[in-house]
Image 1: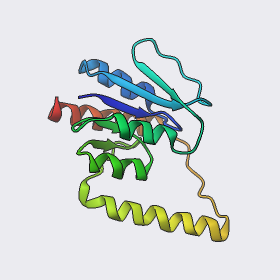
Image 2: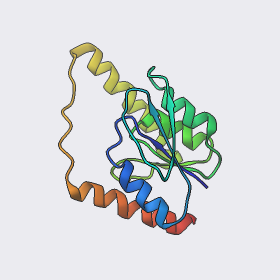
Image 3: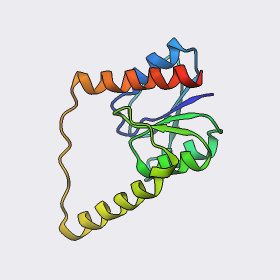
Amino acid sequence: MKIWIDADGCPVVKEAVRVAQEFEIPVVIVKNSSVELSMDEVEIITVESSRDAADFYIFTHMKKGDLVVTQDGGLSALVLSKNGVPIDQDGKILKKEEADFLLHGRHVKKMERLKNKHYEKIKKRQKIDNQRFTNSLRNLLRTYA
C-alpha cells in the first residue's frame, strides 16, 4: 500500500505525511511545477502545469488498495475505478456508490459557474478541520494496515 497525495491545492500534505510515517507507509506526493514543496522523507513527483496532470499521473501509477488524498471529485472517481481508496481534505472517504452522485454534482456546479460566472467562497480552514482529517486517516489506516 502507498499513500498518494494530490498536492495541487491540498491543505493537509504535512498531516498526511506525518500519519503515514506513524504507520510506516510510503508516500508519493504529486504536484505540478507551479507548486513549491520540499520534504526529505517522501517521494515528490513534479508534473507539468497543465490541468489535471497530477490527477492523471496518480491514476496511471496507483495500484489497487492504495490511498489517495485529494479534494478532486474526478480523481476520486478514477481512484475508485481501480479499487483504491480516496480520502478528501476533510477526512471523508468516498465510497463507490457515491461516485456517480459526486460526478453529477461536479458537472452541475461547473455548468452553474459557466452560466453565472459564480464562484463559491471557500471558508478558511481551522485547526479542527486538519485534526478531523488526521483522525479519519489514522482510523482508515488502522483498518487497512
